[in-house]
Image (tube, rainbow, N blue to C red; front, side, top):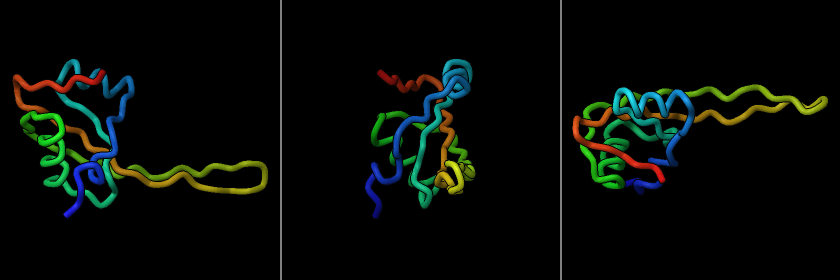
Length: 93
């Protein structure tokens, strides 16, 4: 069994994510690449003590980067968009 901190890496705070939180009660988190929706739901409910309505996940491909002649690549990662049930809130300080 995975630890909840292996599943949830942290919040993904951007302008778009902040607007989702204010208008639609949705929050975006960076999660482990092997985490599934059930593990993500259980981890968020335990960490923040909220009820979740829906979990959507997106696999984000790494980008090609180049420094002089050496080509590299940033790692692939996964994010989850969490929709909270009405009356629940997550506050990031």
